[in-house]
Length: 290
View 1 (tube, rainbow, N blue to C red):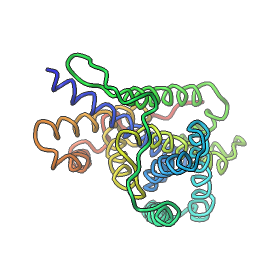
View 2 (view 1 turned 180 degrees about the vertical axis):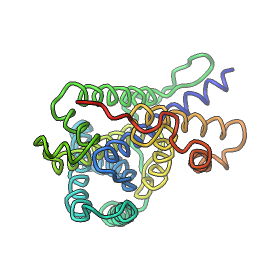
View 3 (view 1 turned 60 degrees about the vertical axis):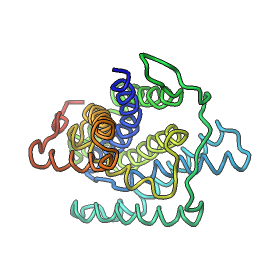
View 4 (view 1 turned 120 degrees about the vertical axis):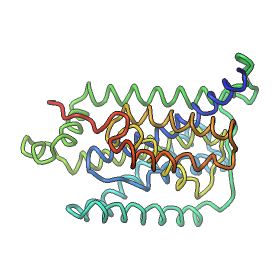
């Protein structure tokens, strides 16, 4: 039983990160119909920028804010310089553009940072907390708590603000949104900025546990994509459930079968969804009047 609890805690911790990456996919997909495979690079930028800023003597809170702002600027530039000029292109073309952006950002990170693995000190110590026989790192609470706060803030943004409702209206029908005066170009740019900020926060929270390097984004993007597909592409609730499910499957598979197959779990999830559950667990978000 303690073993199962340990695997579940580990799975939920990494699953929370996958959920945040999947939320980034979902926000951009809903606003612009673009599947952004550079989403994982936002996670990398958040972690690496914080590591190097703190190494340069910047206090951690300022380094965190700076890393989030850097990721937001990169997200905005990605939209303005790569996605916006290709407006009207086919989905395949847009996917290729985001893959190219991912490769470019990875290469740029090698030049700006380096090729080594880096870590951050845990935010509140490394002493594990014993619960039911399992050892839980305090940083796991930061990851799970941070993910929960982001989900609540996103819910409030989309349901309690005019800008959030404009994003929902754009996701429901872009042409109708333009006809009622919504600046859809601004909304799509905002979706990239928000996704970049969420990805950066995920990278900052998880770096003390899993380390970071210039190329961590590629695998995280694939696992976040698997989570988004499992939950139902375009469904925020599905992204959260899918992320946690992929994290749990990964931890249980590594614990009870073999850690060799740990990274294969996400690919198996993608294949299962493609062949058996094309709409995911929650399907596509329904169109609501806003």
